[in-house]
Image 1 (tube, helix red, strand yellow):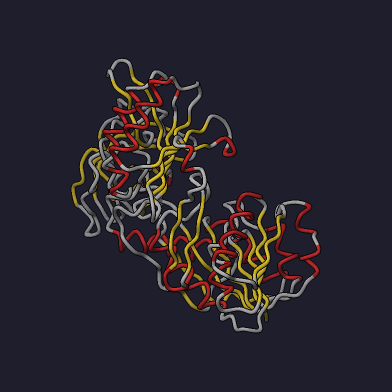
Image 2 (cartoon, rainbow, N blue to C red; image 1 turned 120 degrees about the horizontal axis):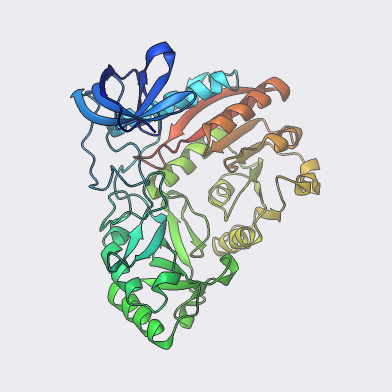
Length: 439
């Protein structure tokens, strides 16, 4: 610790995706100063000294960047949900695009022939999914509901969130009162929220049984605020609706351009930003260029977010996914849409499932949307199916870059295009898409 260090004045030479300005200290040792931006002159104090870099506290911005923005959220300085509200959205996009291209060149040793224009939409009020922390604080005499503080386990005492959908943001004070009125207020650590097209859903993680009085309080809240409440006592399979009559009522979201509506459960994965998701689907299909005679492989297909729109254009689409509930959802969604040219296979794409019969089939096109760890072990299989074009959707530029290098160097593909998609504005998250074509 170095909290008694004297104030220093320095120029900021760069900014990280986490929103910290980079100052070049004596001997080349960097100082990371959260809240500072590239090109600014600042006053700061070193708070922590580490082996490879120091951490500083921003005291004053002496010469602000032209790209500096006034954070829209009053909790930004403490909340861990966002890191870039002090940087204009256009500059955030440019930084994320530069980060992607740097990773591709530095890690993958590849450069796209074409840089795709960033996909972006609403920068505020976009977030339709969130996992909120809940904590009963006896000293405050109330329950806190919100995101955790930066690098701290404490829950931010927040009454609104500018990035969350307004239907959720305005509920935060009421949720605090709701949990505070329950007998298990100290045994309810999390609320998962989802804003679907047809309902707002709240999944309460309950560690102890609810009393009859608790159930009445929850039913009253659901009626007053027109929300669906679910209870989760264990894993995802334990989720049940508070109102048993809603057991068969799925949530849904539309993909209007393709005439589709996908149904899902309250803890199923869906993309956070609805507008960006729609544009992402359109771009993926545009890059793949499917025709009616094509066989398409969709890896990590989930409940059919890409599979079903692809089936509207291609001859046949095979979706592969390791999670059985997602595969079942995908089949139900395809049937509801009247699509008979889809096939869904449950397989662990990180393990032995990648050796199934489908790996010995031929496909004209392929799309994959893997987890943050990427798909390095799957690439030989992917290359083996013979796809002439591959669209890779990524939530981590580092693993995309690694896999891009392997596709180009070892599997006979060219990186034709790449670009970012701003699925999480105001945060350091970088979603991206790349197109590979067979040499």
